[in-house]
Structure formats: structure tokens, C-alpha cells
Image (cartoon, rainbow, N blue to C red):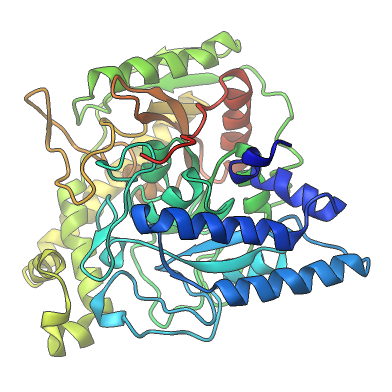
Length: 468
């Protein structure tokens, strides 16, 4: 493998080189840390790095490998951890001044499983305050920039992770998705991102589990195979997460290349709730045609989904207020104005709001159930726009028509369906856009297999070798 390709190689290829002895985990870590040192001052993807600790772990792994010890599927891979998740020895700030000094001595179940598979945590990646907006900007660390164009956002809330992966800083990073926060940055930075079925990956430990049941941990990667291996490593129950699913009865990586049967696939370009940027739609339609070229039946639909965005904002604000009530009632000025506005709104939420939210969620679940009675997959744009400015604002219109910037992603958090974003192509400005692939509930393996078949038929655009 050419030397420069080490920075952008898929994670599974790098791990294979480490396991075979062709690549030292020490050399790989040195390369990753040097790239972070060179690029992070510009991109602001990492908010904390422990170079010494990471090097010690890489050196210890090299000794164990030399002694004949077996290594895991992510042997020696430098790992970034999103700053909403816990990694022992690092601060979990959640992008908030209130948690600036929240250094923890434990790993989330997800992080522990990745470390057991051989990954080495190098640091924490940036996220918006409490992950509540689809771009990565906060008052504690500032904005994260997109490696494709420094005047654009890499998306959010997993924007630090996507910028780190797309710029070649690390081959592996964690991500989470409560309304699109894996798929949005995947779309905006030319990566693959999978929101798995609700409960597929445990979220634990948590002193106060969230009750809306919409957030998922999942893979954000440079290739579909990396994502399949990632999910093999992290999926499965944890007794501390009452919503975690039983272990899957298949290996996602081992079934990846199984031929797909002829599928009946719905394609909906707007879901009836947003306008789409013309060049984004052009690329997405071409991407959807790849499935027709593979022999699948594509049926264009014009269904309008039950819209619940405004009600989601109200009720999720109430949940956020409950989780942060102690701080809100005693340290109100520790929150940013942007987040305070959201929490203040929750004080006005009443029973009728909950009733309407639950009714609309029920309608959405029924609509999606009916859809998958007729079709094997649903294709949509991942997002209706290309990446916007690093600190916002979120686009509210396209060519003078109203737009909902995350119209395609959050519905499937409320239904629990697996949904992935694959790179669809480049806009006229040379920025990535994405095709979303949604599968039936608990059919994560089908979404991965369809994504892999698409990747083979239509290889993803090369990531930018020069930042900006």
C-alpha cells in the first residue's frame, strides 16, 4: 500500500496489516498523531488528545503481537470518541461549559467493546452542545470545519468524528444518531453512516436513561465493510440498557457479500415535506438508478409522511429539561443562549402537546409499517442540501421554497428502522451529497448488504487529499 494511502485506507485493511505484522501499531499511531497535530488546528475535529497514553498502548500492543498474541478486528487502530460518549481518562464535556471538567474513569459499553477489539482511544471529537443541532459548533470549543471546504460544516452532531475520518486523522471514530447525527455528517463529508435499529447497540451506563427511545450508537466509516465489522463488535445486549436488543444471529461482516434477491424498492424524493437542492436531487436520482442497474425494481412514490418535527422539538426539549433540571434550576447561565431557548420552550409543554406528539408518532409508525408491507427498501436523499456554514444557520429554504434540512433522517429515529447514508456524488460546488437507504425494522443486515452492493457498483468518491 502506498505510504500516503495509509491515511485514508479503510479501517479493516489497516487492522489486517497490523495483525500480519506488515504495519507496526506504533508506526500507525505515530502517523495518526502527526496528522492530528498538523490538521486539527484548522479543522477542530478533536477537542482533547492523549498522545502519550495512545503511544504507550500502541507500544504495549506491539510487544504482545511480537509475543504471538492474537489481536482483534480493530487491532491497533487509533480511535476517536465522540464527546457525548464516555472514555476512561477523558473529559465528557457534551460540548457544554457546564461539563468542562467532567473527567470520567469509565468507558461506555460501546467504547469498551471497541477497545476489546483492539482499538486505541486517542481523544475526544467535537460535538454541538448536548448534540442538539445538525452542525458542530459550541461555545466551549468552537466550530468544526469540513475537510472538503473550510467554509462549510461537516454536519452534526457527530461532526468532529466525520471531520477526523474524512481528513485522514484516524481510521475509526464513534458516532451517535438521535435525529440524523450519524447520517448527516456522513452525507456532508462523503462517508458511510448507519443508524442501526433502535437498541442494536447499548447506550450504557447512564444514570438517567432517556425515554424517547430515539438515540442510537452506530458506525460512521470510510467503507461499508468497516461499518459491518464495527456493528459486529458493538452490537448486543447490556444489562444496564433496558432497551438493548439480543445479540444478532448473523455476522454482519460475514453476510455482507451474500447476493441480494431481486428487491422491490420505493424511491421518494421529497417525502412530501421539503424542497431539494437541484444538483443534490440530480446526484441522488443517479445513485438510486444504480439499484435499477443491479436488477432491482424501483418504484417512485409521492407519499407524504406524517410530519412531526415541531412536536418532536417540544417534547424532546422537555426530556432535555428533565435530564438537566439540576443545572437548569441552579446554573442557568452555564448553558448557551441557543440551548436555553430550547429548554425554556419545554416549560410550556403540556398534556395536549404529549397527546399530539404521540398521535403523530403513531401515524408515522403505521405509515412506515405499511410501506414495508409493500417494499423491501426505501430510498430518499439523505439531506436536501449540501453542507452549509460551520456555525449555521440551518437552511430554511431552497430556491425560495420552504425546506426542512433534516426532513429525511429523523422520522426513522421515531420508528426504529435501520437507515444508512451512502455517498451519492458531488454537487456543482464539489461537495458530497448522500442517498439514504432505509430497511425494515431489525433488518440491519439487509441495509448493510444493499449498501455494500451499491458501493461495489458505484465506488464512493475519493476523500479530499488536501484539506479545504
